Image 1 (tube, rainbow, N blue to C red):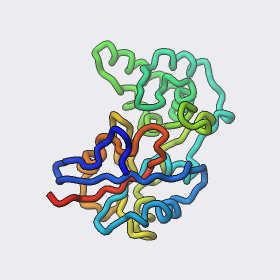
Image 2 (cartoon, rainbow, N blue to C red):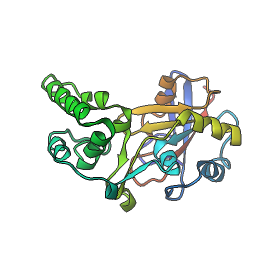
Image 3 (cartoon, helix red, strand yellow):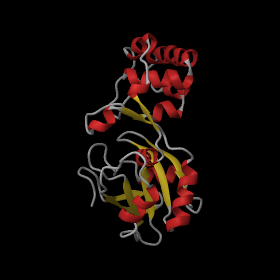
Image 4 (cartoon, one colour):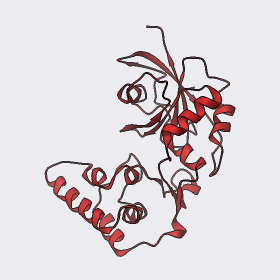
Length: 230
């Protein structure tokens, strides 16, 4: 299957690739990613395939979450979030919860500096400066909203820990070549990949540039990528 609005076949500099979206159940915190791959992917996986894994599912398995109930919203977070830009790509620091996470994770001074630089950048039409300074953990935080799944309204989901090691573990246990990606309908970041993959991060990102996993309630965190005969 492929998600609505996405193409099953994509043409890249490395040739044609089919993308097969694998539907799962709603994955809960503390699940086992090895068992998930074994249950949902192995029945469809063929030698030479590449498995693309959404970072959120690995983070949930690793319990990489921060709960609203454990956070205290500061005046600084409330103030700075009012001036942050909104994006349809996902939760941003216009959410007071994500801004507070940024302050807790990076410290007040660094986030103040990032906010000032971002404000200056806006005057010259430059975007993304805040996240360039705050770093990948702040940019990659998901959750803290219940527009699609009510559970996600109660916690934020951090990036997975040691994604390269996770990919190595999956390959060692199941023989599945894979990559872990942080993707939305605008950007794709390759967070980790199996060491046996002879593709650059740029080439891998090109294969899923249109985010075939979707960005809503599709429940398709696994995408099997299959090279086609040109």
